[in-house]
Image (cartoon, rainbow, N blue to C red):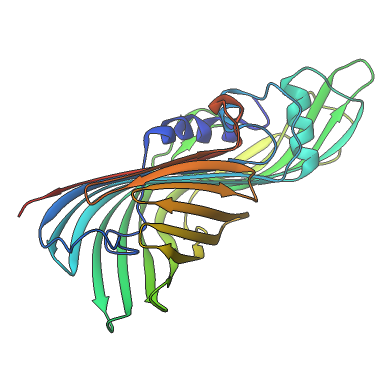
Length: 361
């Protein structure tokens, strides 16, 4: 039994994220080069992932290096929608959200464990996981408040498919002879129990989220885009399997567990996930040359981008992740990719977006 089996189980799903999805809103921050579309179908994909202790690929495959950090998170969206009116869009969406919070001692103990480079000592362990895979229906409404102010509202009704949600807290110990042990209290809800390798019998719930975007034409040269994504993001569980108890490996002098046990139950409750909020300002230097800067926060992570837009191309840099990216936008294709390393295997920051639109009229 591995101390962080939950991490492995959730991140096996994260491996699929590099193919997947999201959009800022089919109507939000519209290009001045495109005219409104009254009828069309579209597909949007989006991936955003950041790991503080080690590259994202190692979070999936196993840590090949010593890592120190306090969080890792990833989300992806795959949307298929239809514009049924210049102001209305409807669609379906597949969603992935993963959030890991851990102490630096936990990250250090696990990285040493993975690399068989254990240092004698006692390590406080604390890991929280908040992971969800779900499906959603959405309705997007574009509201022109004036000639210079637009609002886009997108509510989601969500059906959860898979969940990993809980916390491990305890201690790890490394002895002078190289042997190690760990003990931890467990409070864990799941669709599949990664610790005892069993599927849950009860996974029943529903949820909701809300996107809101505000676009303001401040002057002829300056525009602003303000957004909130996944506001009020909550899942209401009517029935979900839960394991509580205390587990240990290689019984030692640690005093976390009086005995090795797990108590199973079926529980209800509300799972909440973080909202993303941000601001982007664009300045038209020339008719085809624009500068922009954007800042947003999501979970524990923050992003600050500065970009240069020439015709349909955009080059940008993220100063908080030390990353660079490139993008392309036309009336039918939108694409961007950003990394903090020339090798995707060594990158801690991944950003990917692709949108395709097919006008029907």
